[in-house]
Each structure stands twice: as structure tokens, then as C-alpha cells.
Image 1 (tube, rainbow over the protein chains, first blue to last red):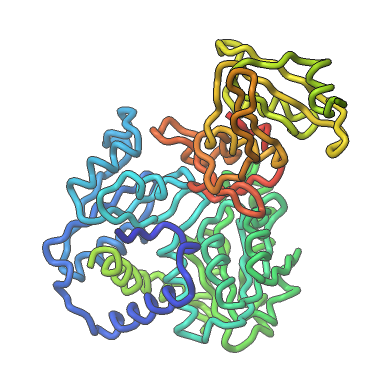
Image 2 (cartoon, one colour):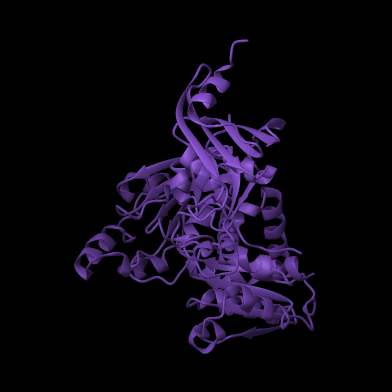
Length: 298
Length: 157
């Protein structure tokens, strides 16, 4: 049985094959009924808009249907049921499970108890492989991924999309630049793993130091709840804000990505610049997730 | 005949046992952690003798644990390798050493170590045991990928 739990479980050949498949799907070269009669269960124990809707949309475009549990408050978890039991039960209702959960490793646990394939749609501060695959897909639309300079900016401690992407980029010999507020740096264990994989990581205090050298700028949201008060949040958030003025002197082919939702970290005026790719990135979630669903259910 | 170093030490510190297990060559000061790893508590029935910081020609100092009427399995003793890779296990039957073996670091540690990551699913009420892969860099949590690189004994359950 094929599960998709962590981008770390993929080698480069497998990632490239999945992205090639997503491209074919994007070019409408696929069977629209390939998953006809199949049911996808979406178990989201944390809020989600894009990930959940795009998985459901992807399933519908392949001829399948989706089931979901509404809110956590309305499901058996609220009655004290363990995740393991929920997964065993839902395995009987669906042909694959997409799960988002606040605890790290929850998807790995789900895969142990499930009788059907499991796809991780985010586990706490851990992994978010479908987001990473669509991030890579979006980068590949603009440039080859090999040996590029990628900056991760924002909350790199709790930002699972940044963790997953950094791991994947290590397969492509990319150089990683990190810019984050004090206390929200990349976890030491992840940084050690990336270095072990041969990745060069450069920490910066200020985005201005590196903006002219970048091929990809990956922006993540700085969460207000990580700060003791609103004033200190605004103080930090404003120094990490991407504006048109900051981008003067950037490489012509620079692309700016963001897993969304965006709050204050990208000035809306940036949306009009050719660098902005975050809405296209979000749309790319459909072909990439269609390729993932076909990978686990076919 | 001259007594060996072990015999001298044991003669002085702890009596020979008729049946059971002697764990020798434990790194000095680690005996209590070895006992903890083996799950031996104050409520355990077996008689237990511990000698710590016994002078040793090869090791400088070592610890010894003797456990009567219990033969440890390979899985149990291999766990000791995590904190004391030079330990040797002697299975004693009727005062004679019937088996003597070293310890091997296992590939997977199940239910022995608590994941230090408070956000890990293994630290909840789920019906699972913690699971760590033993890698050269440390113990890697199967669930959340946290790596324990130091102070292993403080995470023993």
C-alpha cells in the first residue's frame, strides 16, 4: 500500500516522476474517470481551506467522490475517541484518507492503522508533502530546480511548509537562505539533517542582504499567537514584509511563493509584479494533488 | 591460582549467584540506568545486586549488575547497548556461566524511550508505543522525526 507521509520518504526520481505526471494532467492528458467509484475521506482536525478544497476538487476531476467529517467538534474525536480508532473506522468507508492533524507524526500513526492509503495534509509543525510538491511544481514552471538560491522567510520554526520544502530542495543541490525572527529559526535538528544531506544553509538577519541573489523567495506567515503582545508582533512582522521597494534590484526571473493564507507579510502591490506566483502556486495544487491521488489509489 | 580481576571484585562486593544473569563491564556510573532500562523497580521480586565504580584494568572503572533467578532475553540486553556498548552478559545456571555474550545496538527501540517533542503523537493517549530508529546521529523518532542526540537516559520511560 502506498502512503504519502513525508517528502523525506521520496527520492528525487520519484518527485520528478510525480511532477511530470502533474504536468501531463495540467495539459489535460488524463482519464477523467480514472477514479470513478472511488471515495476519498478528508479528515481535517485543523482548519484548512485550500488544501481540503483542492483535494476534493482533484478527486472530483478524476471521477471520484469525497467524504468529510465537518468540524472536529461534531465528530467522535470530541467524544474522546483515539485517532487510531477513527482511522480504523474511516478505512471501512473510503478508498483513501487525507489527514491534517495538530500533532506531529499523526499521519504516520494513521498509516499504521489504516487499511487504505493515507496522504498527509499537514501534521503539526511536521510535514506537508502535497504543499511541497506543488511548490516544486511551481518553481519548475519557471526554472530548473537544480542549484538555485532559495530564501525561506518568516516563521521557520513552526512552518511545516518551509520544513518540507527545505528537505525536498536538498535533493536538488539548492542553496538555502533563511531569514526569521529570533526564536522562530529553523529547528536545529532539521538544519543538521539538511547539512548532513550536503545542503548549504546561510542565515541572514535582513532580507536586503540577499534579495539580489535569489531565484526563489518563499514567504511564510508569522503567526500573531507566537508573540506576547500585538505591539511586538507588528514590530517583527513589519520588518519581514515584502514590498515593491524591497524588490528593486532583484533578479528578473525571481519568483515569490507563499503557501497562503497571506496576512500582512506581502504588500498587495507586489501582486501586480511579475515576481508574484502565489496564486498560480495555489492553483497548481489541483494537478499535483490529482497526480498524488492517482499514485496512491491506482 | 591467582584470582582474576572479576573474581576479586565480586568476592569483595557481591556474592556469586546460583541462577540468573550477571551484567558485567557496564560503563562506570551507568548501572542504575541499566536497571531502569531493564524495567527493574522496587516492586520486582528478583534479588538484585549492584556494584558501581569497581576498579577495572581495561575500563578504568566499571559497574556490575547481578540479577537472581531471571535470565534476560537478547532483546532486553541489547537495549543496554544504547548506554553501555561494552557490557557483557553472563547467564548463570547452578553457579556456572552457561552463556556469555556481548550486547548489540538494536536497529529499532520500541517502548523504551519517550519522545522529547511535546507535540509528537507518541506523547498522547493513542494505543501506540514510542518507536525510535537507531541511527549514527542518534535516536530518530519514527513518528515525528525528532532526533535524540544526547541525555538519552533522561528520556527512558
